[in-house]
Image (cartoon, rainbow, N blue to C red; front, side, top):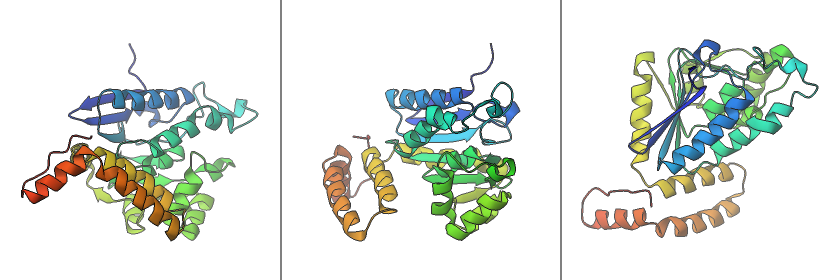
Length: 260
């Protein structure tokens, strides 16, 4: 029996979602997009409280697979796979109610860049790199790549990355503020897992509100953000975790968050 193209494990509240086509540098197919969405639902059903996304083997994700039965040149409309699979996946991760850590263990190319940059905390191996290579085959960034590139790198740098299609080494991505940490290759999974496990023991509902608020704030006025923060604070303050944390503060002890 062949290995599944998407592998999910849930342990101690941490869901680890692994792209599992190492022989193809974990390049994506529309079927994988649907499998990933199903895995995200499964993680929630199993009580996960944080998500770690990574790739098997020597690459994170080489983007959409355009070979081995997935030849997009046979399509009249290259945007069809986006409509049928990938866009829904990107939206699902962006709106996921759990904190997301991405462990970028090698090349993150094309749509793989989008998946990597969707992380709330992005940890990259020193040998990893990011590349928007669409222009090399005469097409444009997709899977949210245009938005993510501009938001993470700024307009001028994003235009350079997208129009030249050159590799951006992990160290440079860190210097530009696009990712959070760069570690030696051998230390990647330990570092990313430690961060993800920390999030898995935190105030889950507060994290969900923070994820949503940060993305909204990037596109909103200060007045709108103030109103949103006011409502979010009410919602967060009514959770059991908030009440537990306040009690723990008063009692000078460490709070025990349960994700409720």
